[in-house]
Image (tube, rainbow, N blue to C red; front, side):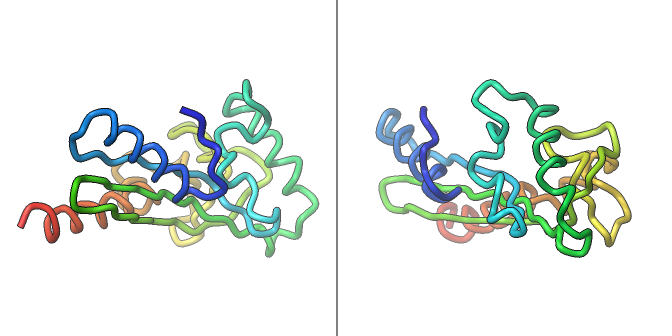
Length: 159
């Protein structure tokens, strides 16, 4: 499926609706990425293909480093965003979670994937790539979105 939305919400909704229409069963889908205000929101919805359609994590990280390098360190704020869309015959719900950090200009850490080695969390003194999976899940955009999604399911769907 082509993710051609201009926002994470549009992409998550497009996927969830398509799979719900195909299957007829309650469905949820997500879209996520990195937003850097100093880069006008880049990489944004293009996070997975920031350096091109055939780009890999290394290519995307190289491009981000190149673009962030001339931005003052105190202006390198960024946030990971995860948006979930849930669809069934009664509901269409959008839920989002985010994690704030600072974008580094060099890789740190070997865990995780994507932009994790460049995403520094000042409160922890580590990048996402330096966190254990358990630590990351507690503060990550996906972890936060899934916690909100779980509450939605518990309060609206499973009642």
